[in-house]
Image (cartoon, rainbow, N blue to C red; front, side, top):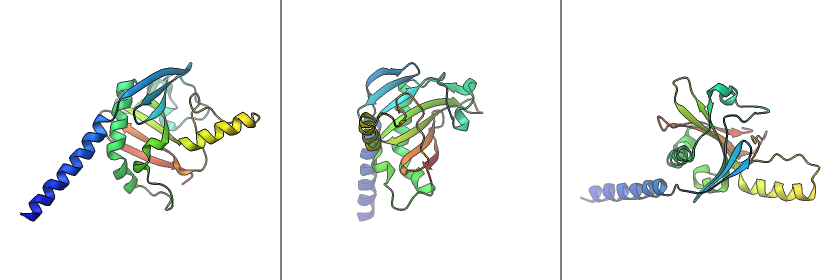
Length: 189
C-alpha cells in the first residue's frame, strides 16, 4: 500500500514538472536584430534566430554547407526549447564536464541562445543551439562602451565562439523530427 502511494506521488510530481516545462514555452517578442538575424524573446528564454544565408567566419561543420541549412521559425524554436528543457539533465549526465561548473539544466534561463537550422543526412531538421552565459555578455557590453577599441563580437549578429568557458558556454543540437537532444559540448573542455 505504501509503495503504491509513493509511486503515485512520484508520478504526480514528475507529471507536474513536465507539464510546467511544456506550457512554459511561449514567444513574447520577435524583432530584426540584423539583416541575417532576428531577436526572439520567450517567457523563459532569449535568443537570436540566424538566417540560412548567414555567412560564418568560422562555421561548425554541420553549418558549413549553406545548401543544407534552413532558417528556423518560431514554432521550431519553441519545439527545440521544450526538448532542451525536458532532456538537458539526462544529456548532462552522459558527457564529461568540468567538476566545479554549474548545473546547466537548473540555469537555462541564465543563457542567451543562438539558433541555427540545418538538415541532416536523413533529411531531418536539426536546430544547433549555441548558448552563452548572459552575465558575461552584459559585462562585455559595459566594457565595450568604456573601451571601444576591443573587438567584442555582437552575439545578436555574429556566431559567438569562445576558446574557454566550461559550462558557461556550450552548444547542443535538437532533432525536430525525433526530438533527440545530442552533441552537448562545452567550450574549452
